[in-house]
Image (cartoon, rainbow, N blue to C red; front, top):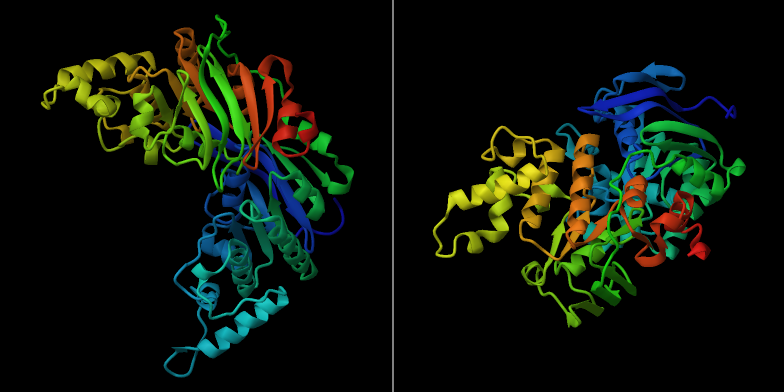
Length: 503
């Protein structure tokens, strides 16, 4: 890509966390007046790279060049002063403040000897910035009264108020309607006219091909390739994103799935998913795959009674059920291991044994008197089977590694002896050894006749562990495959919306 000198170039970037090489020898070039798409599966390293570019993380190796001059982005403020800004899907703005207040927060304009806030000038400049973007928003409007798309425009206007030269757009259209996306395209075109260098992160192939000039592909934290988007096809892009064999060994199935234990018919939610129908069999792992915003987690929360569907049936034991809360789902034999283990899965300040016994306090202590020996025996059984590494079961969960925290959460729910286990990203952020232990335990569960729903963004894991794979895209179920008969390219293509005809 020799069109010009990159405005911002990252070369040989390597970022290491304890036990994980999040980025290895990654490079990306951003050109003035051009859009570069950063492409990769969930977990490919895109977010980590953005944090390096914005001064949040410091790389162990590599260099960053601005206008061909090496720079060090030691802090977010250093990146900000250089003219680098990021606009995320969930951009942090202030709902109770006006548009002008949001745009100038942190760098208010003042005048006079007493340095008073110059609101007339700020309102004029806000109106001028919005006019540059062809956006009709009242500078005095309170942010909470605006649509999601308008809030995105305010975030972009805020970036322009800093005279940002490098604009990072991280999944900016995930919550926008088609009309709002068209408006967003127009804004991007205006930014290109102003010679901004734009990094665009999206899982949606139609958007990537519509507005990008260049592409860079990451896979498992490594740089795979880059070039002109005009030289790329959707098929080539999928191959570059996946481009690997399922190299990790997974437990071989030793049984055949049995009778149906759960049937879902036309399950819908007003805003998250629609018309979901599937069956889950005894002794089966049913995988759910999809990209950001596909609605997988939202579906699982509805199955567990966290949220309420607007229509459809959940059938267990031949009876249609509606769970008003998770306690009713647990009584019916369904448990849910959430993706956010620290916020939703565990009480991290409590010891291991109390976390594992927590859902069963009434059973273990029928007379209301705590029986620590029973709680400790239960914890010992499941923590040992899951190979939790701790010096004592009295050790607080917050002192454990991420992988061991996840094992405790899984052990807590499995100790209830459920019929159906929902595992949402069960190996997210844990090391390869811990993953193997979780996979082996999952195999043992289905071998004992439990039914497992596994949500995962890791394609090798889905293909290695699941009997069947359901693919979701933007709240819809767009494909169902036998894991043994489908390719990684087909799954990614369908999940991206590029190959729905395959399903």
